[in-house]
Length: 142
Image (cartoon, rainbow, N blue to C red):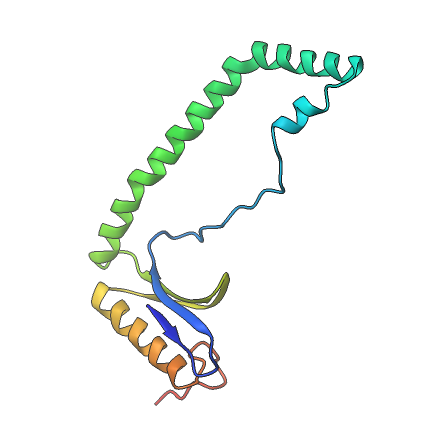
């Protein structure tokens, strides 16, 4: 649920479907063709030729590792529905989190789908009122 906080921030309040935090990976502008562009003199050409021979000899090992890694990802993908089912049956808690961009403002574990939906609504309404539901000093427990 995307809400507009009283201070103007766009805050997302949602259930986390997997127990770990997904990370966005960023790579610094690597271009495979930069290697080929650097082979304009004899020494660079020989280095590139040596790299081609090594990749040819060890390509099978590299391909095997890539296939094994993809199988591990497939196993993780098969576990996600089982985790969701365990959470719906009150075995594992849902993790309700509030984020602002890439920053996690807070998380709270809640058992049950309906209870987690109510918690999402409570957190969203608190941010819309200008309160911070994850700040222990501003909470008013009664």
